[in-house]
Amino acid sequence: MAMLEVIEKRRAYRALDTKPISEDILLRLAEAAHTAPSSMNNQPWRLVTVSDETVLDKLKEALAPGNYWAKKAPALVAMVTNNSWGMTLGERHYAPFEL
Image (cartoon, rainbow, N blue to C red; front, side, top):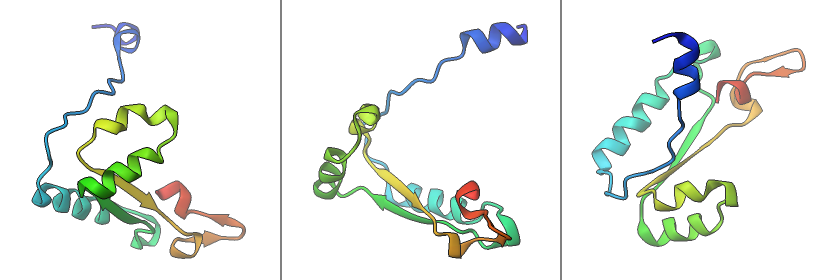
């Protein structure tokens, strides 16, 4: 298939399975994220995983309208960073880029 055809036919599907995700899988995903490479190997990110239905329902209520697709997700992960957690060269903070 020609490259242009591949690009033209690509789609970003936003459908999510509502089946619960096991804690073991969520933990493995978090561990993989924590071992991703970063400047100076300091991984300037933190993960907050929510799968408890009560908390998840409240979190979904706070989602912006453009995140309608996430309202069916059985878990959500927020990734946060802080400039002080990452490498800084002069005035440039790398943590937001690495996240």
